[in-house]
Length: 228
Image (cartoon, rainbow, N blue to C red):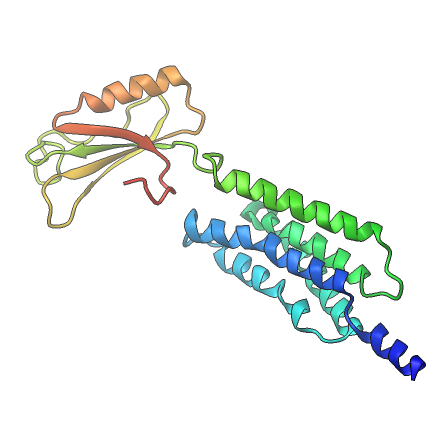
């Protein structure tokens, strides 16, 4: 009976492995939050979503062998996707791949303790950085000037007498105007290059504020849901 119990116990997924697999899922969660809130509709959204969903696979395994296989396959697949899609921001899945590969080591007989520590450190660093980055303007550096265009302004499309300037200079990269559906007036969008010097940005603001019928000038990041 003791031998049978020992075999059955050896087939079970160790608690340390389960913990690391759960941490891998948590490491992928900020990536999903990022694409849903800040870059919806981006070409890589689907890959990030599928990768994050794949991290849950080891949690559904019942024995140590299946758990280890699932962690290795999912971990190496996510690592490959992270490297090959680095330029498409798929590197956000790399921490989860590391933690899954570490979790696989915990499914061996007499698993070493040091990899468990590495997994916890990687998870803590990932979640800490994600919390800081998503909770601060790190990813929301201002890149657009918005201004309300009042009804009757010659800037509006139906006026045509004073077209919207196509080049303000001072770091401006694009200019366009949108009219609010069914409401008077419109909104002028002046995008500018990242890290535009403060002096150029001040001149750009003065140039936009000097346009006819323009008011309520504000600066924000176009990916920010509150930027309108």
